[in-house]
Length: 342
Ligand code: OGA
Ligand code: NI
Image (cartoon, rainbow, N blue to C red; front, side, top):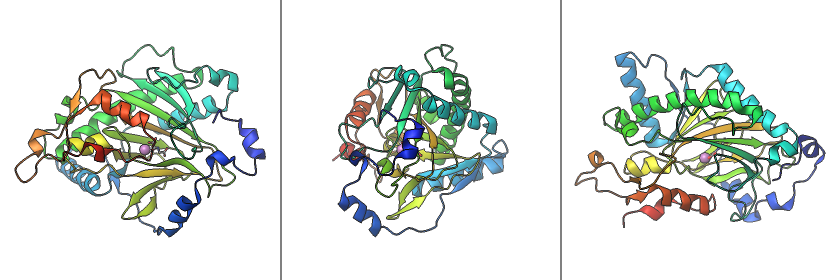
């Protein structure tokens, strides 16, 4: 967006044409029912007690098989760490544009990059947001000098916590698939971490624009931190369901790669972010997409989940190839179907 400053949005009455969705898309939206159902909320408290642990793994299984989404509470990350992360991203976005310009790039090999929509040149409509992405290949990565001053400390702190949570979740997801708790971790699913920090300014015509177009996440798992401004919606049973922000909670969703390695047992569900008259909406999606250094890393349906009754439905993929294809495509291009076995 080459983000105009916050004051410019305040004066803006109409959104520029590039953000306006095609008429047929707006009409299609009107035809979807809107109902009040809620994404499952899972309380991770008591995970170290055997019977509670089993119950939690069961809740994770049900949610992953149906919604592909759930929220977690009592996840162990302190509220001040969550608030600090969101504040840092707000400060980064609302500082002088000259300072932000230092991070402008579309070079995916850069560890820190700031841009508007990654698919800007391929999508039909631009989305109403700017994004700062920071990759971590190791939780103890001491070299944080490259990170912007405005959010360095809070990001490093949050990253360590979300790493631990990621490992807990991959343990639960393995168990929920009927595998040993360490199986997904041993496959390096929790190795690399991309913090994708979105800033959705207040929008004067929210019914015409989207914050993020409908898509599913390409990686294994996403842990999403959001502030209290609504926007995230999941496409579930042919309707858009709002994910109500719960203070202190995190939204967890299954990505395409986990759908692939689970041979379709877990669902990577489509979702989007609608624009809002209120803002800014700030969110931090932490994508676990396998090792950042991904030379010769392959993923396919897990052997233990394959049998005569359950033949593999997906092909094996080369991770680097797979992620490059995702980046090169528009967000709304249906992706995982390209990897069906037949
Ligand atoms: C994403 C995403 C949702 C949000 O980054 O893939 O779906 O609430 N984000 O920002
Ligand atoms: Ni997403």
